[in-house]
Amino acid sequence: MQYRNKVNVISIQGVEIDEGSLWKFDKQLNLFILVDEDEYITHKPNADLFEKV
Image (cartoon, rainbow, N blue to C red; front, side):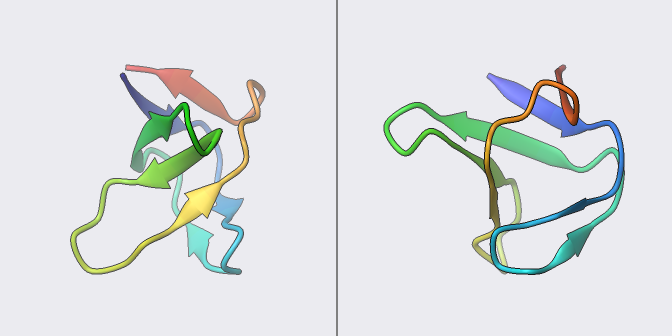
């Protein structure tokens, strides 16, 4: 399942991610992972910040 962030967010790694970026959810890690081939960026689940697409 994929998600988009509804607002700009700061990842666990300290990187600012623009609104509308595409994420997937990893159930085992309980983390959102940014769909990006160049970097591994994660964010904790938060229903106020993310929506299903």
